[in-house]
Image (tube, rainbow, N blue to C red; front, side):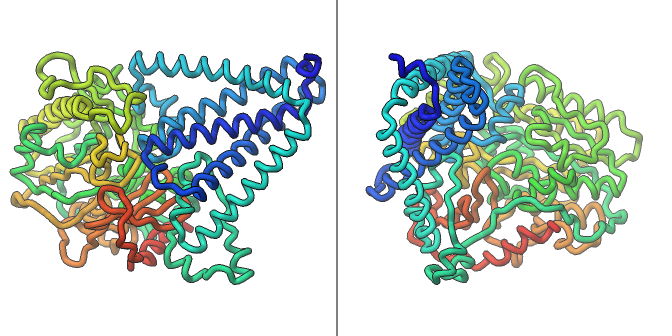
Length: 610
């Protein structure tokens, strides 16, 4: 046991292999739970295993060499072991969390998700007592396992030759897997490149320059099948200063429900909103331009694709709708049931709004939504006579599947009494979960009616444009691929949303052509706010009333991938910018025709940055 008491550099190599092996095991688990492992051949399995093992070996090595250098130098054995346990626990918690997140959302755990979970005050991600207890037990188990890894690494450190051999094998496998990715990317082999999408923190090398040098790939061929997803750069937005003069002095009210899917707008689920919709204009093929709140709301207020989010946030550039409203001296009131710092709307689209309430009142979404409606009414009634106003009411109860206790909102039964995301899998019965969701929608429907009743009582509907919609939808394993919630794919369940517009003077109608959130800004700026600029100065959308010449596809943005949603297929853009072709149920399709609009999208993704 004497060797176990010595702490040298060798245990770091052993420990990195142990963590890498855990990453492989959890990676295969999450991929299998997502239903994506079935059909893989030996090449795909070996590539996934070797890349994952190598990646997390090197991540572990980097962290441990960085933090253990001084303790090792000073021979501080206890300190070294403590750091060992801390790093291992941190990595294992991340890997285990990702193994739960990825099967549900097909998106790996990232910093933005972690940030919103920790600092969202339970509004972004809510934890039931049962769920919190299970998480605490898992964390405790991970700490114990990390201690065991530290002890085992010390004890095995005497087997130097075996350690070096194993590490050399890991290195060779990692290099080969990168070459496989490079070859697959250059030859448009999605069967190989898609393997790397399943690995958390994956950044495989493409080596395009090297392969082009040896004339092994065709650059032009790559460019025709690739869309740049790069973010960043300084905003150049709008391209020219807005020129706005009085036109139709309508008030504008956005009534948005977080996480409201398109098929909830029925007489059974939303009787109040349904009745209002029959009397106004209903858009039956309307899409959000994001499968999450960040990108959906950003596109709504800017008329731009979600790829401009980072640039807008970095520069503090407000949404063009807000800028135009301020130019026309509108009173602006933002009332939400969710915090405006997660995502950071207070630093982007609402950055120039005075007296912005970043944090909602209330201890729950139910309370906060009620307060949002109450605060709107107080604010509006306190405006000077003749003032024109814009208001954005954003209701959050549906997002948290919350509704007031009592029989009034227990309409759909049986419903899931407590949401525990750790129970979700492909065999889980979605009916009680969906019933709880519908009950939350029913509660929100009453809040919408409360706002409409207020407008009626003040005789405001005759000069107020009312827009009722959502930031994105929500999925309950609709296509039996183990997708739950939102942010995971671009099917109708996650990005198709209701849209009802009350526009004074317009008759009730059903609109069947494809529209998106990008179309609201280029409708309101010229037709209400009197902005004479060409639409291309500030938006890539089209007036929502214009049917002729409009697109039959929608560009939607996600956490790590984007998509073109066409009438009969979904063209997915992965993190590398390569295209994948799926049907509307998110399964591979035989139609692999390259979209003719790729060059147009490339221009739109760079038009508004310097």
